[in-house]
Image (cartoon, rainbow, N blue to C red; front, side):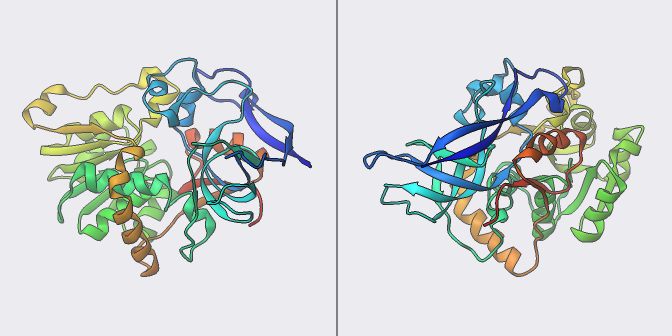
Length: 346
């Protein structure tokens, strides 16, 4: 028996601004037969994570491609792997049975043939929507929690700035910071997002960076006593402005630099004298570095969600065909919260 598997691929390497014409929807015949001795598992995809770092995998060359297997180069025409949640259709492995819910590396498509050794775990049902396991319980949540607590090492009462604060990671960082007792300000790209940060997520203040002519002055206005912790999702001019407003012994956690992914002319040039004389720490990190805090992250996040102290903000599109526009929309700032594509009903 076989099924038609619809999936998304890139036509060729992408080295600049994204267009929908860079992508194609392909269809293959996928056999549902797995040899009894095989370790492969066939999964029906349900929810897929849409993440900006994938653009670096699509380039003809990027330093990220050699850093970790999750960031390996994508071959034009091939299915694109991503983190997702699905249901097992076929398996002869003792750890996976038919109809088990699983989370791991699936593809931008309707089905995935998961090879032996690829990331795949049976899902622990926690009483929340399945989509949460792609977002708040997935790598986005881990990056927010671990990046803030393990990398930034914050203290109650410190002043925290979060860029792209309405995005998949930034909105959680701000909420974790408020729960710790920090003063939190976020930047976002629309008044709707600013309102969300202040009125729904409890940020102390927020501003629309598109309406600011001088980012350094904007941050000075929001942080008259300086910034202790900056959680950076964008790089570029925002990083320069944050460093200029950092206090001595400030910490910068660099989670992403989305402003630089498709335009090399926007690369950041922070004032190095500030970094030296203020003894500022700037540290990049990957979610994969943070597995040591995973158990703490999951238990605390479940506790906060159950108590209504944390909100999971999701932006869900429907169907494989929506994946290219959902992905491109990340770079236009279209999404609010975690961008997810629902491929099929549970």
